[in-house]
Amino acid sequence: MRTVALPKEGTAAAWRDAARGLLGAGTPPEDVVWQYGDAAPDLFAGPPEGPAAGAARAPRSFVALSETVCWHADLERFARLYALLWRLRGRPGLMQDRGDPGLARLREMEKAVRRDRHKMTAFLRFREIEATGARRRFAAWFEPDHHILEPIAPFFMRRFGDMDWVIVTPDLTATFTDGDVSFSDGGSRPPLPEDATEELWATYFRNIFNPARLKVKAMQAEMPKKYWKNLPEAAAIPELIAGAQARARDMQAAAPTLAPARAARISERLRMTEDLPPVDDLDALRREAEGCDRCPLHRDATQVVVGEGPRDAPLMVVGEQPGDQEDLAGRPFVGPAGQLFDRFAEEAGLDRSRAFVTNAVKHFKFVPRGKRRIHQKPDAGEVQACRWWLDAERRLVRPDLILAMGATAAASLTGRGQGIMKRRGTFEETGDGTPVLLTLHPSYLLRVPNEAARAAAERDFRADLSAAAAWLEEHAA
Image (cartoon, rainbow, N blue to C red; front, side, top):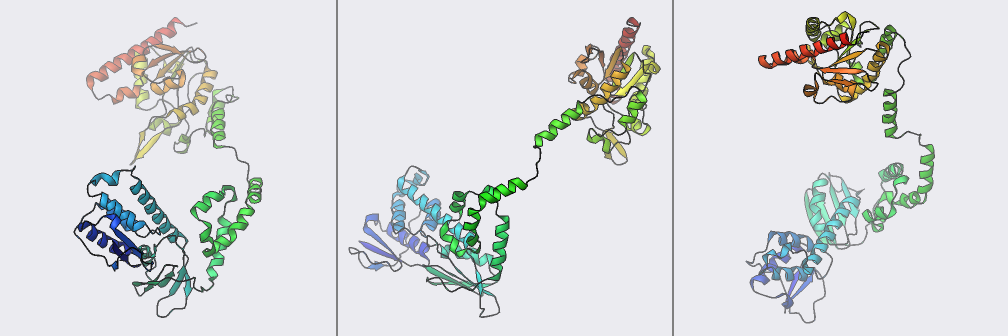
């Protein structure tokens, strides 16, 4: 029976060297007794031996596991690790076997050590003590569940490298002076001075405590009671827990009454569909529209551009939105697209002076690019917001026929803007039964790059305008 004595300092490295030597010598786990620090010797064990390095190798995953488990408080940790290492000789894939009970137990121990290290970094509190040199000096007391002070010391060296400090635990003491750390036996809690800043911290803790979100079991899972006696804010915890319900009721009573977020969306939809403005002439409608803020487009446009034409117009022509020139002039269809429409309408026998021309959207939507303003297509929300004004215009004019030019106008009048190329030249209806002839927007004709495609589009546009003129002539009173 071989006995291996491992020191308190450098335990992981000492166990690794010993395990390599034993494995290289072919020593089975049942022939080894492991001792740690000042543990009493086994009655049946031979004299203690120091670690002996060997040539045996182990998977990297096992090495990482052993580097953590060696600091666990379980007295069987070294034997369990060596038993697993022994079995790994003929089973290199054992480290991936989640069903192996020996490996599962070691994984639990690894997790416990990692959790204990996290608790120490979170709950250790330094207090300043009398300095012995030029650097400030601090001390702390902590009671970990496992032997974690040595492996966690580098964390505190990096975090508090500009000061000297001492961390005392029941098992080990770490002393950091002028950038060097040393270890000695542990001890009992040292007399630590009061810290004036702790009262300020406790006041802050009381003020950020939210009684409405208190979950005692969850809090104790993260901050077990064993750490409370070393935390300055912990003195307030029992008081805060006891008064949490009363404080939560007070907060609820004092809270402002706010409508849920969905209420704003519902109110906005209602505003979009509320009764039409109480006006009975186009001039009054135009004055009402000047203050329109139903969608964000009013913030960047120069002015609102409503329709124009006779009150008794038999034909209403609806486009998409004002362009750059319409936005500056305040009148619809005065730019290149409007001029193209006028030319083709005259050829088809439509008299613009007898038509009411307007747009589905009344403000110019654009993005600035240098000194130019580049047209942007209105989205569905903007079309819906402006439909309120278009419906008001239709109610006042009451046209016999509406010519919808482009997908946006079709969407505003019929509820569907898709497939305008296939639908053009056909008659559909508004919700109140007014006939709508669908056609292309003249701006599309200006953008077609291919000469043959442009000639075909112009031919279709002329045909649609001629169909509108024929319909009006047929249905003239």
